[in-house]
Length: 154
Image 1 (cartoon, one colour):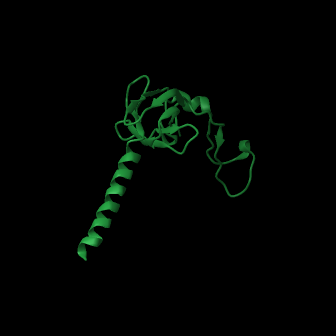
Image 2 (cartoon, helix red, strand yellow):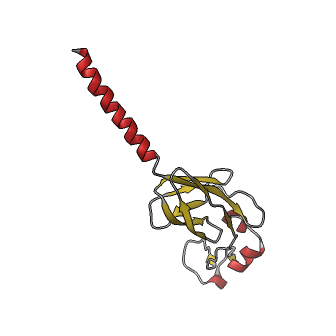
Image 3 (tube, one colour):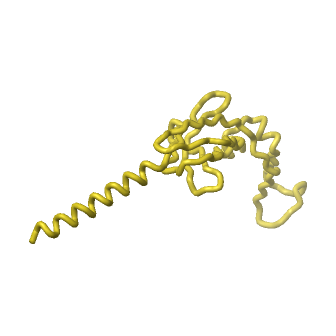
């Protein structure tokens, strides 16, 4: 009696194992590194997206990323990070059971913002009549200060 249940169970487990192997054998991966184009420093947190799909990854602390389980085909990748220009790589060919290397070197860019005026007071007043300290910081002044974040800029 026990043999009857064991044989079908072994057959089912065998089929599941084979189907899992077949699925795993029909995909490839894309991996690489995202760095600053001037310093070569890694860019942790950079986003890498396979255009026109839901596949993507974020770079780790050393700038490395890995996109797994991609069906074979040609893909375009886009890397992006705040404070850097997006970079796109086209014609990345993924093959079964292969790892394709795609490295990015992002160029730093400045984010242009309109000037911000901060006013503190109890009632609305004209700027020249205000009895409090008022500072206007323009985008050009922020750029000259080489500020990394808003706290340093102000």
